[in-house]
Length: 223
Ligand SMILES: C[S@@+](CC[C@H](N)C(=O)[O-])C[C@H]1O[C@@H](n2cnc3c(N)ncnc32)[C@H](O)[C@@H]1O
Image (tube, rainbow, N blue to C red):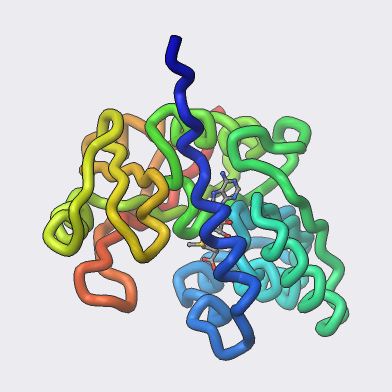
């Protein structure tokens, strides 16, 4: 009998990465679209930063006067966010947990952010995470996230040998976090995955590096 290997393992890579990150890291500077949207929410909104990294967005949300929870599966992330929160005198709820099993009651949040997080795993991981986001977000709450697009898959395949371990889920030879499974999608796949949400913004653009295509979306949780 063969036992399926877990595919939500990328936090192991990020745990090592976050042990070396400092204030000069590109991961320390908040994304304008993320903070612009948070600025439209009423002060005191309950926000979950899912897969918070070293806390660039969670800390910015707290500075805006929101009630913030930062969650990540990497211990070094939790340690870094705690240290920054203490240094900045920010009151954050900081949790070590997996995105597929969120330790919160239903409808606990007004907004969920998952920036470069949800695609770390196969389709079942992605679906389970989206179901958890749907559960913990109140009806009418907003959800902003990124996903990896098929344009990015073509770039990765040109860079390094890789193989599709299950539908739309790839691993690549290192270095980098793509030695861990990553899920890629086209627009139709993504809209189908967002069952229970109404996306009102959706676009594909590269991040800092050429070819680093990501879907960006902002959606509302349907009742
Ligand atoms: C690319 S980093 C992005 C960090 C942060 N969202 C940001 O934009 O600065 C991905 C983050 O997702 C976390 N992560 C990966 N898999 C996860 C999982 N299964 N559950 C929770 N967090 C996970 C990693 O530990 C890492 O901190």
